[in-house]
Amino acid sequence: MSYNLLKGKRGIIFGALNEQSIAWKVAERAVEEGATITLSNTPMAIRMGEINTLGEKLHCEVIPADATSVEDLETVFRRSMEVLGSPIDFILHSIGMSPNVRKKRTYDDLDYDMLGKTLDISAVSFHKMMQTAKKLNAVAEYGSILALSYVAAQRTFFGYNDMADAKALLESVARSFGYIYGREKNVRVNTISQSPTPTTAGSGVKGMDKLMDFANRMSPLGNADADSCADYCIMMFSDLTRKVTMQNLYHDGGFSSVGMSLRAMATYEKGLEEYMDTDGHIIYG
Ligand SMILES: NC(=O)c1ccc[n+]([C@@H]2O[C@H](COP(=O)([O-])OP(=O)(O)OC[C@H]3O[C@@H](n4cnc5c(N)ncnc54)[C@H](O)[C@@H]3O)[C@@H](O)[C@H]2O)c1
Image (cartoon, rainbow, N blue to C red; front, side):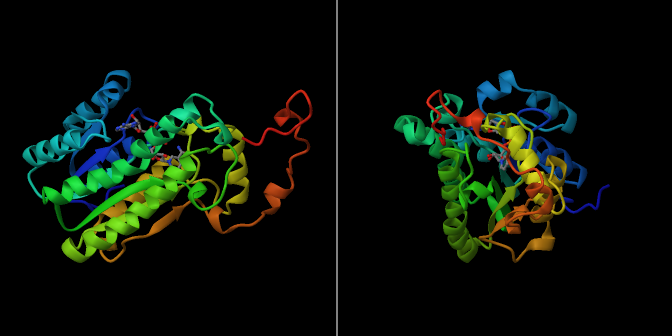
């Protein structure tokens, strides 16, 4: 159902890879709500993923960019303003990747070059995006900028690895940049802390199916799916949230406020054998 919440607004959506991607759902909802948008992802993701299909379906241009490259980001903003007109009203950063997770390096055996890449791709890119946009004066007064985070920024989750550090940095960047962008340009900057969601990035997290089940049992409203995350993003892009900035907003069915639920307690883990090495030591990494 459309409420025309983004009628006449222009947006840039980073990170749609395939139909499961949260950014994919946000792009569809944004257009449904009356926005015109451009899409961006890495050249490799554009080749391997399905973003061109989304571009055709929504009649929007796909602009290749590695979000760690300031030059690429400048291209995205300049081209988006050419195609959509300026200024831009909203931006979604829906980007995350950890080479350490991919290579199955545990948190007590990190490769530091890879850690640098994790932080650059998943967090510093958000700073680069905003710094580039601000220098180009690309964002409208009361424009809205969002990135997607996870509760592992606040509390330790088994297997989330160096992505926890990236999310903590991402949320800090949102506050620090949000202060300056708000003061100088009235631009809003927030992060949405989303439930575990079955996507390509999500499936990289160790024990994702069990984590999803646990979170679902803990959350009074159950896990929030990608479609409802898209709804929340639309509200944050709309004029209905003009005074919300520098916040980390939980969109998790209540998970982050629950200590223990009956449904989770009832299925309390019966043993840790699966997580032991041959000497019987538990592998915590
Ligand atoms: N899936 C979950 O459980 C979950 C939960 C909370 C938060 N999030 C966050 O949501 C965001 C979107 O992830 P998703 O779950 O939709 O998975 P996804 O795999 O569909 O999206 C991740 C995207 O990041 C892009 N990307 C990777 N490296 C990049 C780079 N250098 N430059 C530009 N783009 C790059 C990928 O191409 C991909 O499109 C991420 O920030 C993720 O951490 C996901």
